[in-house]
Image (cartoon, rainbow, N blue to C red; front, side, top):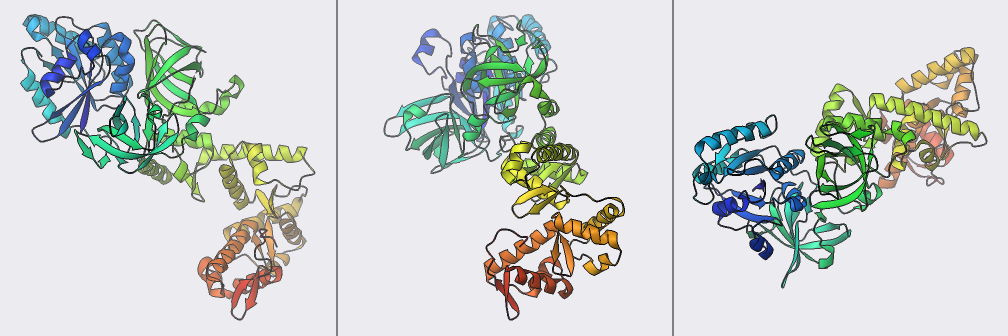
Length: 634
């Protein structure tokens, strides 16, 4: 199904064109009939000779009802811009055209109606004027069709154009993030509460449990209606009616959202929206700091306060970044298009795309933390991935850009391209941008050094303390800690993490020996040299080995070897996992996992027997007395 939105000035004949095409009068409300204009959204369906369906969203043209117009355009595939031949291009023609452009519509047609009321020469002049108005935009090369909704002239050509569209316009994207912005809500006897809207981003299925915004209630889908029939599954781009079980009508409000997402807490926790906004050239209003505005996303409208990111003002015809805090949180994704209006007088200022969510307005002195936002305009997935990793330092791949209008496949495909270019790297299932991560690690280490210098009595830090000091969340802190452990910057002593060498120092030849040993242990992680080999190289190497063990950078395995602390943690973790799952461990298990020969495997198991991690039973190792102890440095 394709969705085409009509747009244009009041009384230019949008509804009458739709009626002649479909046989359905979209002016469905008695008030609309009485006043002769569309107030709310009207819907009608057109079927092509190839049995494709086109849904028309007939939106209101009167200035007072522009917000309804925005609701209609939010999920359309193409626009039909209607201009009356006897009136020409009017103020709402311009406003509707700009709204459609700002909302990201990329296909459309221009229909000049009421051609029976003017002379042919006038039509030529009018068409040229319209071409000039839309020049350089998505309608630059759009077809101009001349019709009369009263006589039917020109409708054969209009129908012929419509019949070709299903083969020219791609189906709306299924990104696995279903959202239906509610544009109508009503009660149907015997069914209960029903909502309608144009489904975007994913599918909905009968029996599926969904969440409802803003109430954050959950409900089961009782039935779905689309394309004038009951369906089991609704797909993106379809006009869809949904009824529910277990949900009161009072929670189904126009401007609300039906979503397949179960946890909606993010949108309340991060209510401030970062906007990439264009102020319309024809407006006389500058966008200034702390101004109250009305933001429209889908069918959701919210008043709130604007804070400008860098500019003192954004003048007509200019673009810039702004932060918007709505009075009530909005459910929206990064990449969504929006329109900004003044609450009073009701004037459209501009629009653009949402590029981020923040928990609160940043203070001016904190703005350097948000420099990544400059990279997000104009918004592309490549820029979004790079800037998100600058913002987040390191992220598990499965949660990266979860709140963005992109699918998991699209995000992973972009990551794969970046991995091939080696601008992004992976660590323990997470991804990071190499240059941004390097800068972040330097800042993190500086914070840890300063904190531990000020708290010299501490023997180390917990994960929670590290998170608090660095400003990373707990998951990120764990990843950074593991990365710093693997590089030897941090060491783990029991359950605490400490800076390698803190409180100790090496000088001269011992320092050089230390650096050489650490390089050897890093390059030969599972086949380190024997302690005897290192000791035979002299006193400096003996001192360096002692330092590595006492500082927690390495683990001394009996009298035979020294492993990097991170490697020993891996070995212990595998032994625990293997014994827990199968009840026993063999020398062959270590060989298969790490490539150890008996030269290494036997001393390792003798060491774990000594510490009580394992206990020997014939050729097997089973749980020892201290198997459940968490500390790997037993």
